[in-house]
Amino acid sequence: MDKKRQIAIFTTASLPWMTGTAVNPLFRAAYLAKDGERIVTLVIPWLSLKDQKLVYPNNITFSSPAEQETYVRHWVDERTGFKSDFGILFYPGKFSLDKRSILAVGDISERIPDEKADIAILEEPEHLTWYHHGKRWKIKFQLVVGIVHTNYLEYVRREKNGRMQAFLLKYINNWVVSIYCHKVIRLSAATQDYPKSIICNVHGVNPKFLEIGKKKLEQQQNGIQAFTKGAYYIGKMVWSKGYKELLELLRDNQKELTGLEVDLYGTGEDSDQVQETAKRLELAVRVHPGRDHADLLFHDYKVFLNPSTTDVVCTTTAEALAMGKIVVCANHPSNEFFKQFPNCRTYDNGDGFVKLTRHALAEEPAQLTDAQRHELSWEAATERFLRVTELDQEFTRKLSKSPTKNFMSTSLGLSSSMEGASAYVHHVASGFEATRRIFGAIPKSLQPDEEQCKELGLPIPAVSGHAYLATEESKSSGVEG
Image 1 (cartoon, helix red, strand yellow):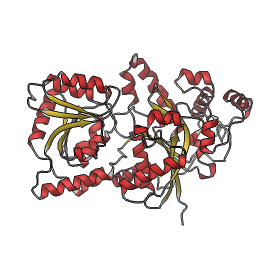
Image 2 (image 1 turned 120 degrees about the horizontal axis):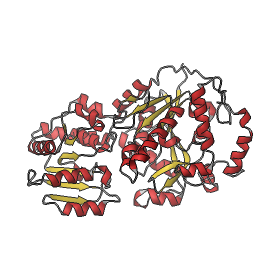
Image 3 (image 1 turned 90 degrees about the vertical axis):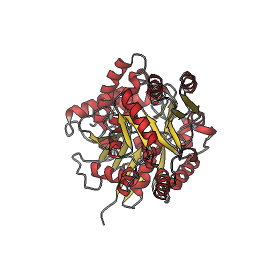
Image 4 (image 1 turned 120 degrees about the vertical axis):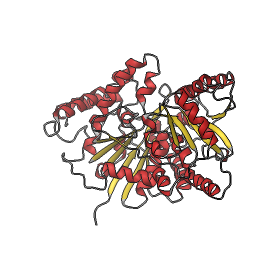
């Protein structure tokens, strides 16, 4: 019998934070492990209580990693309909207020023992490796696959001095991803381009939305009016998530859209401003707090309006299509995957938006075929993932592997000299607190603190980060690349 491949999926967020990098890697782990052909471990961040209170909704907190693991497993099993068979490990993380994201603390690759280090999947590889200081991923693991979730450049361009920041970030992202990943998958062409990357949507939709779609299909086939409400949009209520574009389209075309009613659902930093802007329109635009998209409230809406261009592949668009709705969205690379579905309508300008919205409200959605529903599922997403990564094929590694505590396990002479030298520069730079701070790392995140070590059962570092670095540098004459 062939030895099973061991897959470790590292990601940048965890439930109950309902963000894409918490939800999609969780489903990926469940479906990769489902057939029993692989040993799968999901590696997610553990936050101390003060950070949990900043990140997790509805005052949900956990006193231990075991308690959070129970929550995560219950959530995914309830939605997939089968008992998941994958391991869960936690790495120490801290929440960055200015980035509104979780950053890793210490060398998180150490969560996987050397003898079990086979395949690593880095969900948001740039995010996971910006400040990585430790073993080189491509040396420790036989295969490292990066999955690019986020259009960081688009978000940064919208900030003060955004063009310069985006220019620098583009090169930093290229640098760390090339150092640490063998293969890179971009969910769509809306992300930053990476050398030798593959464009493939390897995400599916929560099975719950496909079940809703089946019920709507039955209603349509039985002659029952399946959709009794008009148009809506749901998303985190920040301007960059499509609200700016949608309200501008509605403002500029109020006469052409006379009588249109739109419901907006979301919670976020810009909620008050969105509400004030909506009130100034002549159209009936109602603003509501955010809710679960699978809530019964949304089942009867017929048209989902989504003008967002900051997404890579919009999860709510996929969910709306799975529920059998018509989606009106921008003609943008992030929506390329959805164009294969008859209920996806893309526009190029304001006139197109008006025309498609009016037509969508006047007609019934097309009935999805079994093949189209399958294409939206996590089963199909897993098939696509296995095909483009070739995980089930033997991966012949050019570099020999030997477990080591040091940064690299082969000499610079045996590896690519340019890449090895580049990796060494990143390793050294990421080991200095001053350098880390300049590039936006959380202070004192070179190693986990005593509290995190106790919570995760990790050994407490015997020396400070500076002393540790000095110790490692004293050994640098024998550094391997």
